[in-house]
Image 1 (spheres, rainbow, N blue to C red):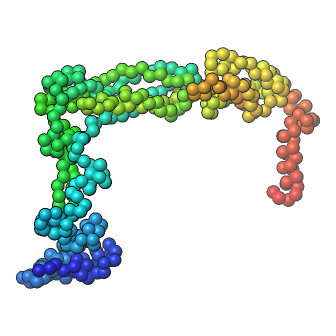
Image 2: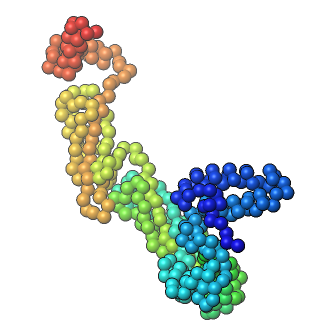
Image 3: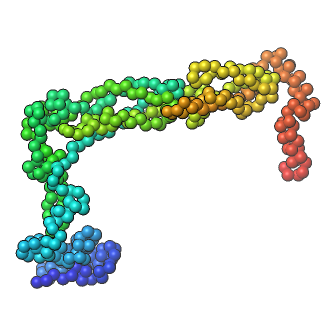
Length: 379
């Protein structure tokens, strides 16, 4: 007897949404549930039909197949030569497995590719001066290396290659047909490798690699920035038999410096000055990141925040002969713990400064505006 249309079973139209399907299913499932209809064979049959219909239509792939082929999409066998699921003839399209091969490249011929070794990540921390000059760091990396006992082949019989897996014929995957659908899974015999080793190495147990600690010397180029990632090709984990090694990625962190602060290719240095140095002018000597010294002339009347530029004294640009600049930023320091003599001199200076607007123009201008503000009745 022909099955009823799944949409008709649920009482919905063919363009019903997922929510519409769910509501219809719940209503009918409650109506025909065996617990509500004990001994009613017709209700039991209806309940099974409702569940079958909803199981197909709630799944987008199954629903699409049902919309195209009807119940035949889920019926196996039938038909004569060239007949597919439910008597449908797929011979014009060739074998369904070949169609999957063409669409997704999942062919059985050629075998699975050897598994490339995993990439590794290692962090290093260097000083700012080392980042300027470039340096070498020694790393100890826990990784998988080629097994020396079998020379990476995985086989105890040296020189004997792995055999093609008899289950998947080298594809690394096996297929099973369920109704209209073709399911592909990793081969359980070779674990997706496509090959099997008949006599595995007793050291690596057929993997071709073993866990070891490796020592590496890594060159850090001059001009490297904080957060730079350096790729060392082929220095990662060893691959399986016949496969390439992975890569090692070294992530560089640069420690803050006591004096220098990097801003791209430039260097900023904060230099504290005594009040008298800033007022009278002076010449100070400062260190440069390349190990030399430089003299900076401080003009009279220098203020906190003023900057002085030393060209070509900054950071090296990565893989270039160009250097940035160094900026000296001044911070005028107010004296503390004055001696009686110093206090006397400063009080005399203050008395003299009050009689001269030119000595502190910003100070006098600011408080003149404040006075005008209050006199205007805005306070």
